[in-house]
Image (cartoon, rainbow, N blue to C red; front, side, top):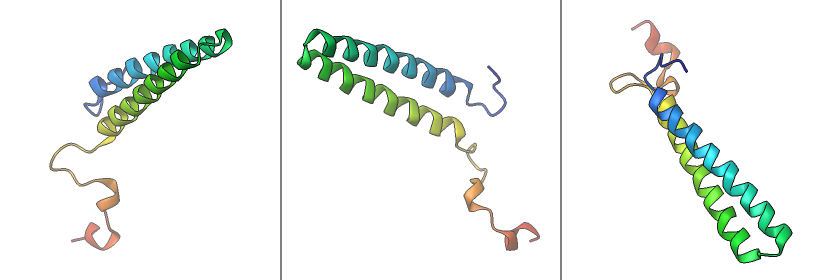
Length: 81
């Protein structure tokens, strides 16, 4: 995995969290089929938490390095100044 922007560790964390989410979603699916609704609910919630953690890690990987303005901070009038 390329580490061009220094976010490689964050992207690896996002990948781990997404793998955990996949596992938890499969467990929830199987539990529903088995009629274990409480366990399915718990697994679905943990899958959602893992997805939220993956999104946070990806946002951190996409953030500009300290001291560099974010792309949304750029304004055409300030480009020539």
